[in-house]
Length: 63
Image 1 (cartoon, rainbow, N blue to C red):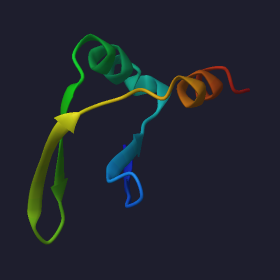
Image 2 (tube, helix red, strand yellow; image 1 turned 135 degrees about the vertical axis):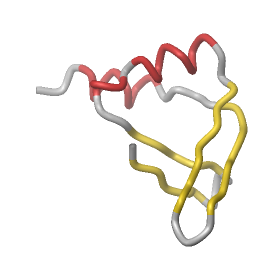
Image 3 (cartoon, helix red, strand yellow; image 1 turned 180 degrees about the vertical axis):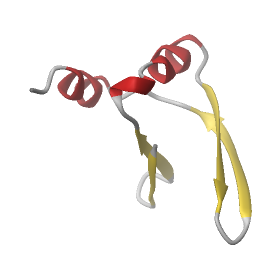
Image 4 (cartoon, rainbow, N blue to C red; image 1 turned 90 degrees about the vertical axis):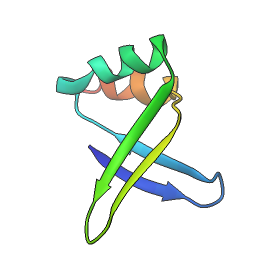
């Protein structure tokens, strides 16, 4: 999973591979999510997830 912070939206944007598409199903069923960052310090972020349909469908059907 790749994560980045969008300061303008105060959001963490993530992407993952199709191998982990279960994550999309899980977020659609229950949008409560958490992400654990582990670098020099460990940070746990909790919040509500949102699927961006255009992006996910485009990535699913890309050749």
